[in-house]
Amino acid sequence: MDFYEFYTGKCFDAHQYLGAHVVRGGTVFRTFAPSASRVSLLGEFSSWEEIPMEKVHDGNFWEVSSNKAGEGMMYKYRIYDGSGRFIDHCDPYGYGMELRPGTASVIRDLRNYKFHDSAWLKKRTDRRAEPLNIYEIHFGSFRKPSDEPDAWYDYEEMAEILIPYLKENGYNYVEVMPLCEYPSDESWGYQGTGFFSPTSRYGTAEQLKAFVDVCHQNNIGIILDFVPVHFAVDGYALANYDGTALYEYPHAAVGQSEWGSCNFMHSRGEVRSFLQSAADYWITEYHMDGLRMDAVSRAIYWQGDPARGVNSNAVEFLKNMNRGLKERHPSVILAAEDSTCFPGVTAAPESGGLGFDYKWDMGWMNDTLDYFRTDPLYRGCDYHKLTFSMAYYYDEHYLLPLSHDEVVHGKATILQKMFGDYGMKFPQARAFYMYMYAHPGKKLNFMGNEIGHFREWDEKREQDWGLLEYPAHREFHSFMKALNRFYLEHPAFWERDYDPEGFAWLECGAEEQCVYAFERNGEKERIAAVFNFSGIEQEAFRLEIPGAAEINLLFSSSPDLQKGNASKPLKKPASSKTKVDKEVFELTLAPFSAEYYLIAEKEK
Image 1: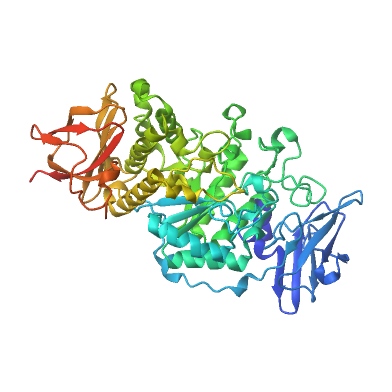
Image 2: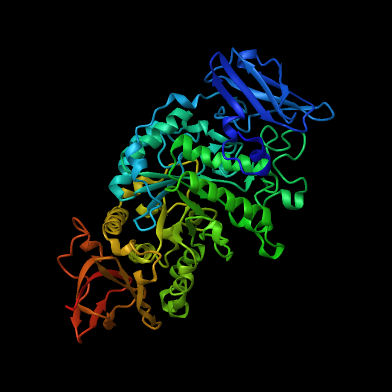
């Protein structure tokens, strides 16, 4: 570790110096606690008796070695403040922690596991011109071995369960909610205590590496949820680490987040180096294929409020971190959860941007879900909620998210959000998802959405897989599998996601009928997507498709037409169509329907 870089916020390898490192003859421990009056090491290897640590380097670092400490043993740092009082802390740079309510760090030798994923890493890309279909999961509630809240599959067991499901369902990436250690199950990992420690709920560091390795061997990429804005208030962790506000702001007005957690003080170089090193650690040590950065708006603006102004130090931190990560790992994905209008989130730092590859399109998500909550009789008034997204779409590189945040806290699940009774919800949900998958932008869907989950997500319970015993949910799941495969197999839907030539409106002014149509273009195929979001059949609806000689139905939201390989032309049409002019087609569109047509061009 370069100490100058550490202090100036340019370091990406602080974890290679700080923390507990197994060496020949024992383990060396180092921690950064500049305001501590003294620091001691405690552990299983010392019967939890204090081992004094010595100041090293410039006096801000503390170090000690133990020839009795080794892999798997627990330890803590006892840190005395200026008045002589002490608090026992876990290691901020520790590679492992014990299961809550325990608070000790665990020595891990990360050299023990050898990856077998070189072929995957060699071909890995940021998916800019490729399909990216992400399945977001909470590790502990996708599947559970029993009904007990504390019953979880470990990392290796989950690989055996999850990977076949992802492949069968047509997802090529999985996004995992935070795996950094955290004390409260209800925080879902977003209030962390161990930024370098895989949560012990699901096993060891070596088991997590094995999970990633097997995913890669099955051509599944992994994006890890990463929280660079705030951390848990627990006294044994980062809060007041050396008796002072070392990682957080000293004043509550900016030091406490809306979630009651501590905000990182990004103006400190040591904090920036801590977070950058943690980000690089997950990519380097665990071969993660990307990071989804949580709550980016709270870094851009003070407390996430544009009225309070831009937090320039945090913005510079994001730029430097993303620049450094992309220099070291050009093929990884960096995605921002950001609902602000701050410009250049996905622009290069060299151009003044923040340097993310993708930004979550929260506007698209909110507008679209609001539209489908509306009574179809009144959707004409909200018609342009579905056209607005393309007015700003090319400002950033957007990803379309239907995440865990949309299925909790009284918001209802995606299927529940569809207007009407039980029977009305399914055809609307099928049309809704066809709209999502045809719309430009990469895709993200939270676990359970694909089976029409009816109960809001609860981290203590596994998803309601028993729903698949009911025909409506079983058919919806079959439809989603077919739609996912269709998306992966048709370049028109992803090859030119961020090129204006890849999209064109065919109909965006049929307010009375609630009909929309647009065209997606790849290098070698053109697909027209047509939607009737009204509850009324639209007869003889005329659609002009420039340059089209004919159109052939490829995919329909009708469950009767989802037999076999849905990427092949369907044997019977979902609607009648008649060519009435050289480039005009007359369609009969069923209520709450969506259709994809392959466009055959006129000979040139």
